[in-house]
Length: 196
Image (cartoon, rainbow, N blue to C red; front, side, top):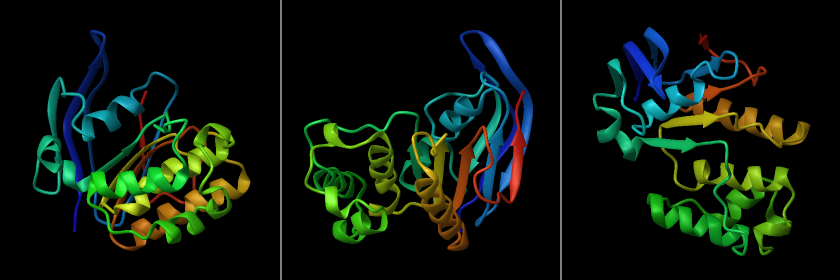
């Protein structure tokens, strides 16, 4: 089972120290809510865990590996959906399955996300909520034990938020770890890391 741990972590952005000596451990099955005001370092912390940002001090471990060594264990979902406007939903899921080595069934994932009826439409005609649901599809089409989610409920309606909460709960119940940057509560996290 995979864990995520930070010890004595300090991060900087633009020469500005965001925080010092942050330590936490997210064991297998943990849903960690990262909270704090804008600019506190929630996104930077997720990026550091993903290996996109080097710590100013301290260490991060994903299982027994550094973030750079643990890419095969991680899914990072940032603010942007990362969709090609001309590509349809079904093609996006096939692409992510090929890219990430997934064997998820595209039709099942589309159904789970409530997108089966718009599967063949170009993403430029999807609503913002539908586009966000599609972006969440990469988590399902090629499962990985650690999810790093940056404000994943953005653009989702009440039904979409309930779906997201269920996806996170199911992932964690299966032994996965979800580190989720939030401004408002999203489900029932097992621990909260407050920044700022």
